[in-house]
Picture (tube, rainbow, N blue to C red):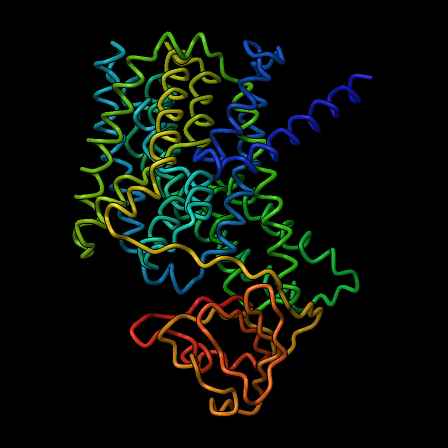
Length: 493
């Protein structure tokens, strides 16, 4: 009966989490806040009265959920974008995290009257941006930001966890006396970054080759095969002393940037898995919280959050990203999107499990800082982007999708283009586009009307055009659909 009750509770919490996502845009509140709210309402001091204070279990569940979220984020981060922004992203994920942690830790030690090392530990826990929060807020913001800016934010948030973990574990080791050697800390740093990167690259390439060559007869097994390789990357890196989070993120990037069979099915499956991970993670963290304890550190937590958001993060961004020629308003936006989320709360369980003095105070302060960050920064992100004149409203998704469910490698795909005003194809009959052999305009969606393309069909701004083509011809067709003064068009395959 216990398992039946547990399944009932899990089902109810998942339903509440999914229902809250439906109202998030209407309420103007980030969906992650609503997931947290569901957990807090169901927790020990909420209306649900569900007792939950198992920090070991919470840390384990949090690690698995974060791994799934990072794998999906990696699948949707192109290798081209990484090559373009790896320098500023690496600077932000190392030097930026270090500076943010140091400045925030000094403020925390003073405001909470903590010893310096415990204050720096708190700063290290909240020093990195959270991939789950950043991916969720950016993709639900309704904005299309400049490509370089979006890629920098996503790559930074996906790759800065090793630095935060290194600082957190290193300081815990110094405080507890289990690690007081500079050499051991340096080895930990190299293992986190080097091990995670090498394992991620290797498993990503192995996954690509396996998915394309295994020739499975059951389509539903391809997403599971990709997931299995992602989990292997995470586990192998962690066993070898590297960062499992970095490994699974890089494996996702390598796999998602490759030509693989059943691509759309793999992406759809992992999108659902990532949402499940976010719901489970944030509802669980809500269950783990005690509002009365948060109120006890409210003023100090607010002070730490203000220093983090308005002082530490902007200084860190200015010093680490300025050499890469970002405009001032882009630097301001990078500073504001230093979102905190599940990673700091998960890391805050480490001092509790290690028996660090005043670890409960650190945990509650971290939780309060995360709440302030997600509510203030997550809610205001679209407003700040508009105020800084960055980006534009995102194109609405088409009401129809067309795709090839290829279970073998084929030289062809169907690409969905949104026709922009000013594109080369606007107003021109299809017969005048001189499309090469191997390219066919298969379908046009105009509003809710399906237009069967003919030679005299002229494309209009806002049309969704489905083009069947050979893979090698896509770059040329991309140029037809892009604005004359813009970069690459929005296309999905």
